[in-house]
Length: 268
Ligand SMILES: C[S@@+](CC[C@H](N)C(=O)[O-])C[C@H]1O[C@@H](n2cnc3c(N)ncnc32)[C@H](O)[C@@H]1O
Image 1 (cartoon, rainbow, N blue to C red):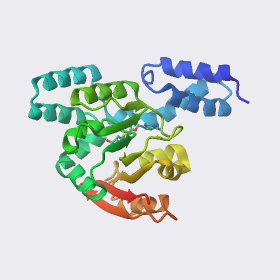
Image 2: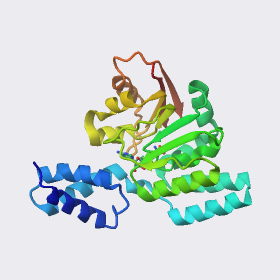
Image 3: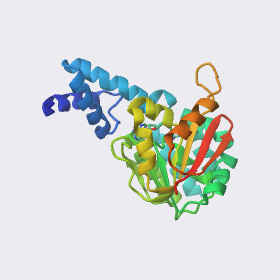
Image 4: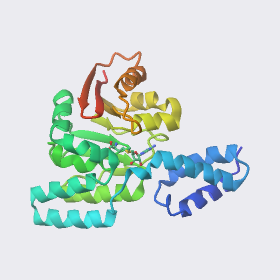
């Protein structure tokens, strides 16, 4: 039995640090429980949590200044100029590596995915980062319910601010999907470019996550080229994807968008 006071001390120390004060407390607490079991000294436990958060949050991938970004969006929505709205969303998407890489692909990306899955009325974006800002390229009506999950609090507040400007319901949530799988029913769940990192941090949890999602379609993508060295990863991730759903008779459609390898999996 781990002493709750030791856990709380680690959570508080991490929450007080500048770098991780914006991280979901749920995430920090779960990591602190494990760290306190492995490390007797509080300093070592705090260090272990911070090291894991660095990998999970991936702050090196980039962030906009959220206040400035929302101010800009507020202004362009007030002007009601669709080109300016798209340009502002594009600039904000550009501040994070995953969405920056996807940006040139956006004109075809969702058209081709939804041609396979059908246009969702309810869409989940799991470990979303800034991807919901791609809504203007999705070709969806504003009565679509877009649930977005992340563990970075200012990002989620910002996304809800954007959703309201865009006429969508503010359905972005601070939720750690490793400890609480999304329970909302939906037509499609996006899990873009996060499965490799998720498996690195949470081991075998990818398969139960995919099984638990209450959706008709899973859309899962992988970086097809290694960040270091530029090696092709298509073969490795294709095999991994098939392993993740092995034993299920779920039809799978593979697509390649630039360097993003993507699978539409129909849960039947
Ligand atoms: C590489 S980014 C991918 C962003 C987005 N899916 C995309 O492709 O544009 C990973 C995001 O997942 C979030 N994340 C990581 N682990 C998470 C977890 N367990 N629960 C919820 N969000 C998580 C991070 O905060 C980060 O915003």
